[in-house]
Length: 344
Image (tube, rainbow, N blue to C red; front, side):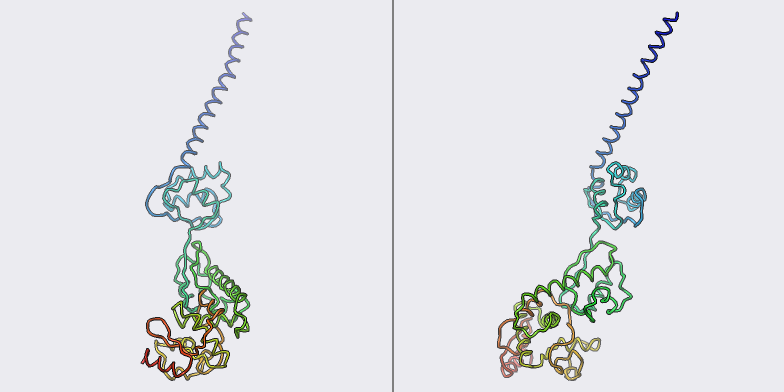
């Protein structure tokens, strides 16, 4: 009797380990299936067509909160699965706050990569050659994707946040197209534009014609701004620079209308009158010798190059032909004939 009971107990005990193994195997298989399902989901497009879908992750957000913000923005990704994917890939603590855009065809795995790398949505702002700094500020203020940290600052206060080396901001920002993440500070754009201007100016100065009568790179920048405003025709820029260099060398007044217009400020209404040419301002090159005190616009690369490498010419005068180009003359008699021909 005892032998039979003992045998029965032994049979029951042997079945215990077998049952545990079966349960463990079932759990592993179920877990593997779930993991396989998540892996498959992670590599499928969230949406395959239509416009990009913007969303923003707020600073200080947790992983769960980030996933929820993405869902609420209408991206179309399962927030629980996205959170799980971030955890199992050990990226849950590496997400970066900011504004993003998800393109058609992107997978949850690609979305997670964007969040970890901080591949923010890009916006752009184009600064045009020949703009004044005032026009640049207006364009920056009108860009809705920027955070307008400098809006209440004066020109001098804004410049002080960028560089201590100059008193006036005119001409100190390079005309170009600047990319930035949505929500970036507008100060970042100003710093980029100034840094690029200084880089281009320094490069130009180092390779300049050393016979030029400039004492500093800033004087060359002033000349470049005048050339920028005098013509939009590429072929004429270096010759116009050459005319002004010739005038500087012999002490002749520059007599350039764009500087007069700049000095008039808001009083300029589209035409220069005779009294405007005789009314003295720091920028009136009909009444004051030499270069004006600051640039009068934002010069581009070609105008900077023209100021550093002006054409070798005997011309002292030029007049607009009316088609965007200029006629150059070596003496006043020739110039007056050209004025009669093209403007009178």
